[in-house]
Length: 609
Image 1: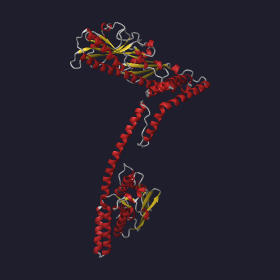
Image 2 (image 1 turned 60 degrees about the vertical axis):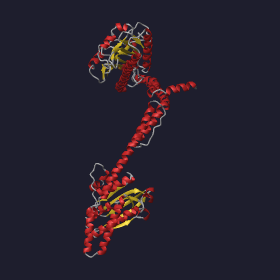
Image 3 (image 1 turned 90 degrees about the horizontal axis):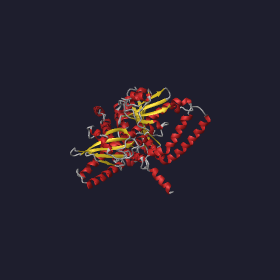
Image 4 (image 1 turned 180 degrees about the vertical axis):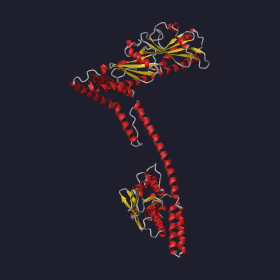
């Protein structure tokens, strides 16, 4: 059990990528190798194309790994330059033997400590301006050969003290902890950052196996066929150690390298159907990454043994299932959980939170996801509040603009009635006009109960009937139990006005307006119907254009009712218009009919008290 806990602790602490590689490298290598042997001939072209894409993708990953290694070495060199400056601040330039010994020990310790932070860097060497050599490793050979080789002078000739200089890959017996292994060297001139005085030259060493390790991948059938070539056409890194520091001699490979010398895009060439050569540019070092795939290997034994294919297929399936089962428990379950929550976000649900199970990349993604969702929620809430305030201001302005001609025409009607000695009718009209505007103003409140809206609409109908006695008659069919339903004021009046002016006035005979209300489940539907001239399909589309944001609104009154209902009750409520030419028009207003319809939602004044 203790061993099991130790193994689990080690595995759970690995990165997501390391977990995938650890579990699937053997499975994928074996599976792809077997598929290369038994795949059918009819899929050979597809296999080649897929192999090309895999090589291109893997080449991109390898280039990224190499770029990370070189950048880390440059960062390490910058750190060491700073530490060397600090070291010189603590020791005099001219040192005694004791001080020199202490300086050497301190320098070696500082170099070793800094290198421990960068696993890619294998060793560091500092040569001061007096020719003294300090290494991060116990020197086995005479390191003075570094002075005689002219390497420091070559670095000084570069002239730019702030930049790093890369020496070619080479095998040497100095400035390296292992003379048998080729090394790549980064050089940098160390100067006093305050005075500009040159302290010496710093060299960082990376072994060729560190680079070639990046070339090995389980995602490619021919994983050992990757190798790096420098500008001299010499192989500087390869899983095959015999190829390292040997020149490219194959004419096809040389021709492809020359043709792509000035190109940065990946190039692939099929050489007479035998080999597939892919060249990818690595501009950071002026290198090229080559992959050579044998097409005969890719299409080997195509279409041979069907029974063997089935047997191997079941074997691969079993291995995949076992691997997937294990991986789902360790890695994919948290990832799938996070994916489900992301899909919920895609569906519009922003109130989700991803659980954080691990401290690897998935855990980091979950934490970032939660932080992002929280920020989005805050932004949406702020935006919603801002938009709601804006819509309230706009709709309040629209509803406050009761058409002046209605007031003028009503006053003219009152004047005519008085002039005709129809005092009772003039008094009733004046009272209806006053009651109408009393509800319209309603102390600035936007929500009133349906009973008040009906009274205001009745006052409006009374005035209009006085003006157009032969045009229409009306009926109100509102059940008493629905009259306490909250509704934005001036919701029925614009619809009634449209029914009179656009439906009945041009009919040629007296029409009927019916205002009714019904309750359906948790909704209440208010209905304004007329038996007027109706609308054609084109006119009906224009009347309903408030549902399309890119259309020009034809009726401000209808648009105001629609937008205010959506604003106060939500997007699922609003207007629905039905019309048939020659038969009439019906407008349904859908509002909440549950708890929202209670008396507590509307102030006492708006209930008529």
